[in-house]
Length: 441
Image (cartoon, rainbow, N blue to C red; front, side, top):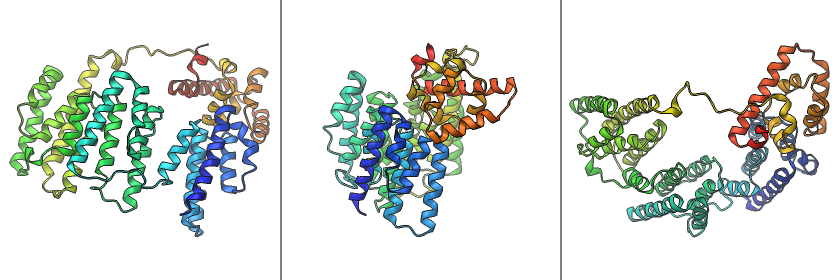
């Protein structure tokens, strides 16, 4: 693999991302035409023309699949995948620095450099202490202090996963994909234990979990002694475990989390205590399932058979059912879960589009179905039409104007289309893509 070509491609993607970030995607039209790689050029023009993310992704994936079928080299396919990933990030308005770090990390421009592979229990315990220290810093001093501390770490995976969080990007799947890449390149599940534990710890920090709870979960998940588990898989033991959870259900219903917490100290089975602890501490169903399954996978990695972990899997299933029930009980007594509580929504009407800036309009066009937009623009004011058209590429502007002129929908159809545009604006404002202050005007 020629890393020089990979780095040159990343540099070009970052250059385009910087232009888009400051001037909008429409400003990419001219530099895109200077790109010699036709796949790269066409990918950029797709976002310039305002295609939505799913359509761009589908088109690029089909093109890559065709190249594979035609015998393209591994290096060519890697570059095409990198271009596709980079262009999608540009279309989403992602920070150029983050795009660079992400692509370098995910596509292995520094493949194993700076990664720690120590699998000893001492290394795991040391990493837990580092994670707890970071959690404490974040809890007491905030995200800026956490970012400063991250730069002192000597593990690229650890540092990069933290940077995903401190840069406020909801993209932890990047670290998960890096783990999968390591497995594909020959690492064993045992060898990547430190990576998985780091990933889990940073996710819990990002979720606002308390430092001591993070310590307990990671120790339970990765370092807890097997001697504290019950390995009896007889039918009698399995039925007793089901009966045990029925009792927990009644306790939770009558006494809530406090009463359920009192039951933790009464059981000798560490896996059962661990499951109850996750539920009480407010982990949702997906999180409970993830951490319990992670412990089971660690048991399998260290020699246990599927037959031996049968009680653990049963406990997991019962814990998930209890978690769902426990959360429902909370909802009944929590204003934030009250379906009758009126939503706090800003009133936004279609005519207020003129108050959006150019970058917000381009974000809107990226998400809109062109057919909906064409109907919504019918008979609209010159101010609105001009604002929309000025944020389109020349080619798309010509096509859209032609289509708007050719349609003749009824008034209620136009109003429905405009309402769908408003709904997209509200969603983008909720996600932080569009400036909420503009929507409030």
